[in-house]
Image 1 (tube, rainbow, N blue to C red):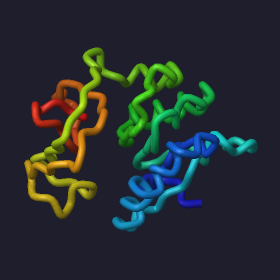
Image 2: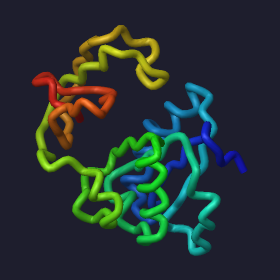
Image 3: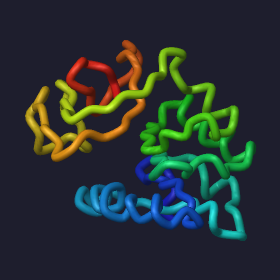
Image 4: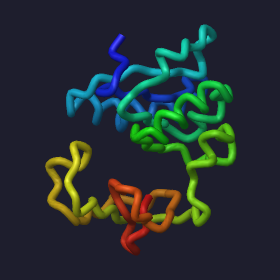
Amino acid sequence: MSAGNRSVLVILDSRQAAERRSADQTVFAALDHFGVAWEVLDGGEAMGAIDAYIAPRALYVIAHDGAAGWLKPEAARLIASAVAAGAGLVSFDRRVADWPDALREFLPQDLGQSRTGYLRFADTPSFITFGHPGAEELELGEEIAVLTTTAHEAWQPLVTDAQGRAI
């Protein structure tokens, strides 16, 4: 097992087939491209996972809409504790109302919904934005639905929309 401070845990729900497929072409393609060690926590698996499998990790990725709604409170608390201790959390799940309480507590009060056709990469480079100049703007082929928030001083947003809101 590659658990430890350099691996990523991807949270998904394979019972949601259409949403799950989108993660193959986005999340997993990006992680593989960057050579990141990753493992999966799947809501469609009947076995569940032991605590040591869930934490500690360097990053948690909620891979698609509806991916975190199935998490048991204990697993959500482990993830929340790891994030509070400095692990990263990236979510592609816009169904945040379904998240367990321990994860919803991380959500900003000013969370909103929007559509955008532009993404602006962060000024500060990271391994995720590597290859893109700081503040590069990318025009999308079509608008996408996003959750937005004001960029907070303690956060390091990966991308923002055209209005500068973290997405």
